[in-house]
Image (cartoon, rainbow, N blue to C red; front, side, top):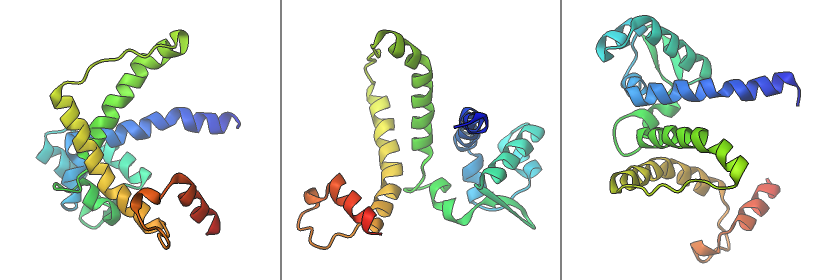
Length: 171
């Protein structure tokens, strides 16, 4: 590790925040529906035009958007993640934001005292967490299932981390 590697790690918070803000605000959903210029997106979504232009430029630099003759749009592989419906990961982005805030608020105290405050979740928070896990889990399950060689597995419970690691080393 050198100073450049450390700086990349430290500045990655900005990438995370841009994606979270664009997801929570509806910008990614809007651009998953089709191309738009930053001025069109700002007008349609009620955003400040310069801020919208900068966020869209950042999303493009991160690889979430591509530019064509009609403006910017979500890259094809990510459209299902931001389009409204069953595959939408908006609840997962909300969960990540909440988790990030909690970690930021409690991590230093845990380091100093060894205690992490336990805050009971409301029914609504549990429902949001469930939505988040279903949203990202449906996509992750396809990736995991596609990467596993299940020959010889008679029951899904027989698949373990060891089985997955053994398959990974064969590749």
